Length: 634
Image (cartoon, rainbow, N blue to C red; front, top):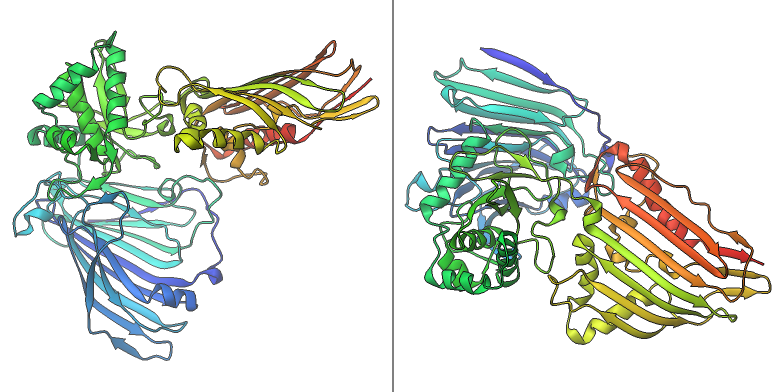
């Protein structure tokens, strides 16, 4: 039986081919899956160097792998010279520990040195791989350690996109027909990606062949989503649904005993919860203790990395680990306190699509309240953060490992009011233009985290860092005092910083005219205004984009003037009214006082291209207001 299926999607901008250092002439992958889930993967590529940069890129071929769970080899390498000759290399394969940062799990690289190439030369090579990305409680000298964690199942995520041109890419997989492989292509551009399904080649097996020609690099727009979210990819999985994956994830950790509390852990939980007043209080205390006391550092413990969460004895003793270890420690402590808590998987930085392939790179925790609702907790992302789940992870997919199974879910949008930045000031302008007054900055949620970042250094440097924030917008300011909440007691209250200052010659006072920009309007603590870093020059976007978080900016200031002024000329800044992004500002006079107010709102973290108009206009309006003075005349 053969079926040919075309897939069409939206068009994508591409880079000119002439600008590319190399071209992949063909990229062919053949996969054969065994009953156990073990897969044998043969990849065959031929790449042409278009210029000397491409020659440099091809000077060494590399394969990344983890020896605990994968076996890889170069089978052959041939150089096809531009003059028509060719040479088969005698394979001299080097095997080195791969470069690593923060996570040291023993990843390796196998390399083959190609040597000198000239533009027009081509490198053809074949590699073989068996195994999978993460190791899981495997041991032995046979192929058992290469069987994937979810035994008997196969999955793959195949990018049909590339940073260099690919003339032809083929991905073929042979699976047992009874495995019921599910697949879906996403974001495949305006060209056709063909699919051939053939069950007549080998009895009891079905061969799926996916082919795409003329793959060109996407011209990515600034702050666009991950490549896998906007470019062509193929997802395949024999797992019947997310519920099956959920039950497997629950079982593999329960069987390992990942969450059994030790006497030391129980004693620590009892000590921590003495001041707890209610259920939510207890959850918050334990979450923040794990977040602040388990250092993020991944050291290979041998077999058992990947989907298995290390046990409480290891995590509590070592006080370090990666996301799964921090999540496992929190689950253990919550269970010791009598809560129903489970491990969950998520994908930070990318969308999880409906095909139940293993689209995960991060581990978190789910706790069940007495009323039956689940609350998501992430001790990895909330050190020194007042939240229990970082809102930098809003609109993000996750899967809880439950005994009865769970479906894929997404975290909701966090309301902008949860991440406010408020700047309020009272000031006065003297007859010589000197501005004196005080200005207070308060923040909550992700904005609190951004502001509180000035304290992430030695105590002796706090004052200097705080001064810099004001001096960046008023270099000649004389700061009389700075008062602030205790940075270490971040759970007690949102951060608050108050400056008392004097700025000589801040305003221009000339006869009947006064010219100045309210200090509060000039984007003090811009570190909490990530939207200002967007380039709003382009009028249109074709790709979705992401900001760090939803947020609300509220500014107000009352300025006492040196005299009464009758006419007020202020920058004309149009308002923006949209749920995705909005802006509004006001100036008005009350006697010899000028009052200013501004409100800027960004409604979510991930935006669609059609949101760009209001987002762009909101950012541009705030920048315009910050850089355009007020003119008062008598």
